[in-house]
Length: 274
View (cartoon, rainbow, N blue to C red):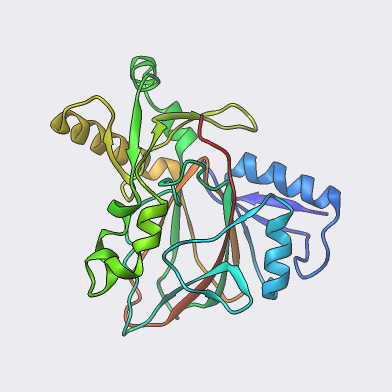
């Protein structure tokens, strides 16, 4: 029987009672789907899945996306490799929601740990719904009328600045011009309202002066990143995190340099943010 044990007040639960190396039933899928929406990020331990099993699990939830800026596994273009070494440390250190630079941001992400450092390398998640609930009625009303700009080039500015970076990512730049999303989004499954901005990809509020926009966004970032809206997960080999990208922020903690850390990620296609 599938069970879920919450790990924090706002979001996050460890799931047990399912072997992800085995074919999943429709009933199990519906249970996981419900747990994902309810807990926003769910975790599994000791799941030594193959790339084919990783892909099969994700396909239950929708079509799969590729990422324009990361290496992928041979024969599995849907599985991106997130790897940090002494020679090539990770550049992503900010709170963010994945790929909001797309008109249809992802539904969610399934991240599997292959190599983890002896210490450090945890990941934080934060609930955008809990953050919205923590705002005053007046602020909620004000934000509901606003849209924000999300930009691939801004999020990958460090990669673009590397020698040859702009040439390597030329197609990604062409395919991903800046897009607008509403600042307050409703979850398509339960209607819960969420704050939909993030430090990595959001560049400004539409119709506001730069100074106003910067001040408002900084307030929202700090508010969403508050401890009471977050949870923390300590990785082990063969741990899996499955998060609802529509309702969460996340942040890798890069405190393990120069140790080796390798993760494999599949991202599930979403719908246009409402």
